Image (cartoon, rainbow, N blue to C red; front, top):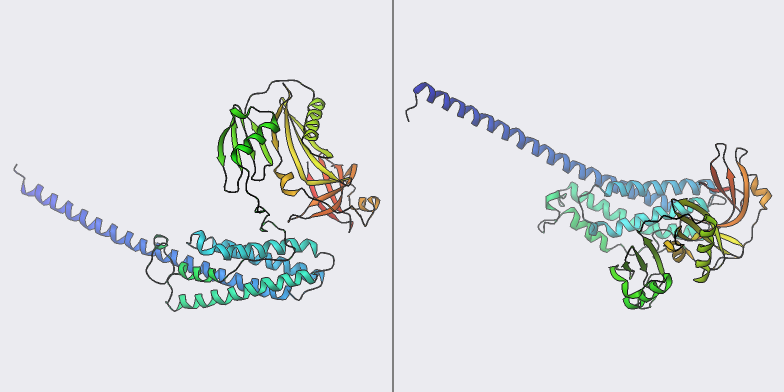
Length: 421
């Protein structure tokens, strides 16, 4: 095929222009890639600096807390400790590590923050007691050692002896990297144990030394509890903690490792008009027949043809708010539609005999005039941990007609918590 000279020159010109443009595009994006990489590296370096600073501030506050006694200073230190822990947790989340590199460090910071948060309320009257100061001293020792290790690691990074991790090189084996150095620090951090700590990071007594119930036994327990056909229960799920779930036509039921029935859920459609009071009586009789003691009906709501209720255990005449069971009854056949005893299994225990330091009349003075009290009872109110505080529970109506539940500490006469129902 013959190409005219002029056309050939135009083609060559366009190709040359395209090559130049492609080269410019490549150069620009290569420069941008380098810029992005430097930005990422700076971000990781800055985040690590923030982690070191937060842990150092935490160490200082814990050290001061180990000697504090006054309520005002104790409260301030609790806030400082909690704030430092939050800052450390947020900046650690930016570092390009897997969970393994920060497991013990994150656990320690979580416990320190949670303990400080719980101590803020318990020390509001008279400040830290001897036990709290000992716990803060124990936390300080770990924080001080962690601060020293992190500061040395920061110096090694600044001297170029340790390299910051690139996202694509997190699992690289060669070279001294920040993640590998953090693993070395992790090995030196032991388990954090505090006297009397029962917060959300406390180890639960899951391992009682007993062998988990066999799946066949769990199936028999579930079938008997709800009157189901054992042969029609099929194993659906088995958790690491020993909980086993079984499916049946229209729902599922779960049993924990110790043989306690955790829950039941149903999926069938319900169309019935049984009275709510009748369904409440069915639920109460069901609980009594299955070994539940005195129960207080805390709430009862109708959702279509299903009545959903919350029952709280009563110990020594006192409501145990967190020791509760939720149960739903179908309005067509009156059978159990849903059941949840997880809160009861987790929180049930022996409570001390009720001994209020202030009278109900004195406690009422903590209720503002904008609330109208309709009922009052002694309650064990849950705390941040697994302990409970004796309170007066006041059922009130707000200025807008809303239902408000106010808890007043039976020892101090001060408001403990407020719930809008």
